Length: 98
Image (tube, rainbow, N blue to C red; front, side):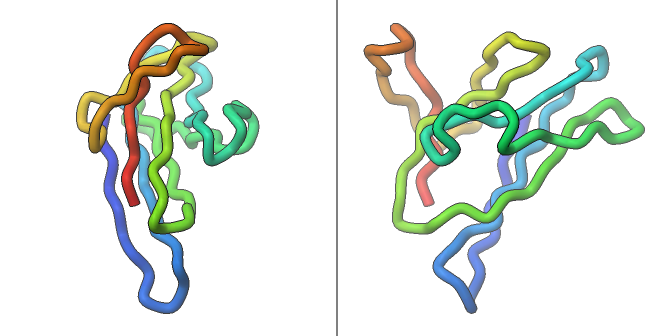
């Protein structure tokens, strides 16, 4: 899994590209507090090599908790900017700092 960030000079947003290798998966999305944990808002597209990928503009100067939802199962990003305990989920969530 990987995250790439590209800060835009013309807008206060960062284009964040999420890449998730999940050959056997049917559906992968990114859920977090930037989209109210809605799996329908940031769906990744499956590429021919079995990797799921998607790029989304997110407001800068924020920190977001997020996870991947792979066929209904949550997965964390090892390359996140950090981790934060989430009392509601009872686990640590990856952090995306922009």
